[in-house]
Length: 228
Image 1 (cartoon, rainbow, N blue to C red):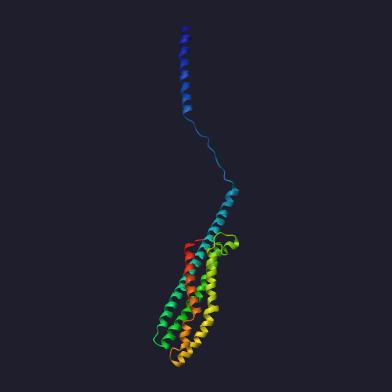
Image 2 (image 1 turned 60 degrees about the vertical axis):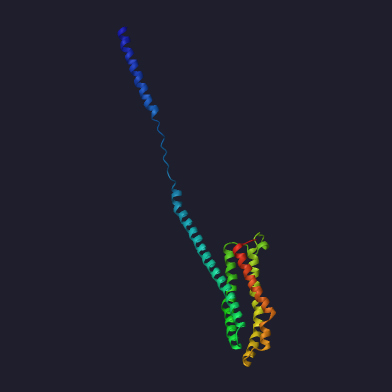
């Protein structure tokens, strides 16, 4: 009995240590289960098409932005031509008024008319046309409150520009024809005639020129500040 107990005890103790050590190793090593994803072949087949569509959309947006920037540059250049023509024309007109003789006055007056036809009139038209195109591309409210928008600076700017353009057929062209006839008569007599001096002080033409300059300043302010 003693011998059996002696042999049994060590075997029980040895078995317990061996089992506890193995359990300790198993408890300390906790491995995460591996998950294998299998891509759907339909998704793989659709990915290049989706990427192609995205690239096309990006190209379309880039093309639209390029055209918008080009039109914006043309709009700025046309505004420079328009405003620069107005300033140059008025400077030449003021110099013509101080001419010593009628022939010098006629030369400078013709230069002012040339600036009017080459810069002011086409510049004004280009500003309006290109501005409308920019507003349509950028989805700006051209008609302001008339189309339910709360921004009206663009509507006021367009109305002013159209009004300035109407000054040409309503005032400048008919008065200009009368002025040319008066100037021709003065050149034939080679002197400043009373009729020519009266034409130079035409109140309607002066008021139209003043309104033109004031309207341009207001339009520039509206375009830059966008106050309302």
